[in-house]
Length: 364
Image 1: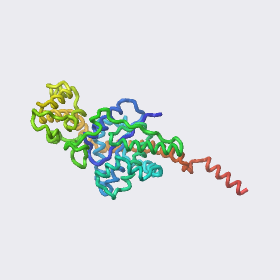
Image 2: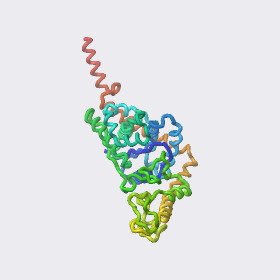
Image 3: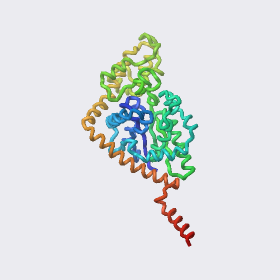
Image 4: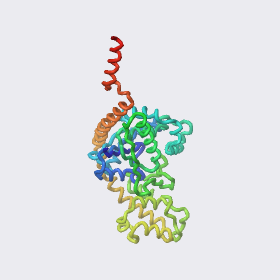
C-alpha cells in the first residue's frame, strides 16, 4: 500500500506558531523524509465556510495568506500537493454518502465538535454544515486514501470518527477505503501550545497568537507581555515551569545552540528550568531569551514569505495545479466508492447486459 499523508488548515487568518509547532514544522520534515509516496496539503475553505457562511470574503482573502505561510515554512510544490478544498467537488459527494453511516447521537458525542460549538457559543443554532464537520473531514482523508494524518491532539476524536466511518463503509460495501492513522507531534509541548495570555489554546479569534509573519517588534511586544507563573512575584521566589506559557514555548522551540548564543549561563533548557524553580531567575530575563529564540526561528520564515509575496500569480498557479492533481485522485476514489456501493450504473457493463438479457427473455 502507498504511504499517503493528508493534512491541512482552515483559511480564517494567517497561521501562527501554534500551527507551526503543532503541524507545519512536522509536515516539512515528513515531506523531506522521502518516506511517503504522496503528500496532500489542503486549504480547507469549504470547512471554514461552515461557520463563516455570512462572511465568505474573510475566507476568500485568507486563501493566499495560508498559501504564503505554507510556502514560507518550506512546503515545496514539487514534493507536496497544495490544493483548495472547494475546488474538489468529489469531496462533497463523498460526504453525502458517508452521512448515512453516522448517527446524530454519535456526532453529538464527538469531543472536538462539542468543544468547538461551545467556543463559538452556537447553543441551539448550530449550522448543519458545522455539525457534520467530522463527516466532511472523513471525506477529505479517505478521498486521497491517506494512511497518515499529522495533527494536534485536539483532532484525535475526529480521526477516530473517520476510522469508524471507514470501518463501517468497508464492512457494508467491501474494502474500498483506507483506514488512516494519526501522527501526533513528538514533542509534548507541541501538542497544544497555549495562548500568550495563559489560555489553554492559542486562537486567532481570541487574539492570543504570535503569527508566523509578524514583525520582530510585534513578536517582542507579545512575548514581553506574556502570562507566566502568577506566584512568581519576585526574582528570588521559586517559580513553576509546568503550566508556565513562557517555558512551554521554550520547550517547543529552544535548542541547545540557542543557549550558547543567547543565554551562555545555561547549557540547556533543563538548567534554566532548575534555576527558575529554585528561585533567582526573573521572568524578564526568561522572556528576553524566548524573544531571541523566536526571532531566530521566525526570521527566515518571514523573509521567505516576503519573497513569495512578490509573485502572487505564481502562488495561485501552485494552488490551481495542485487542485487539478488532487481532483484527479479524489475522482478515482469516488469511482471506487460508487462501484462498491453499486451505484455506478452507467459504467457497469455487467448490469446493463444482465438487464438486457432479462427483458429480452421477457419479450421472447
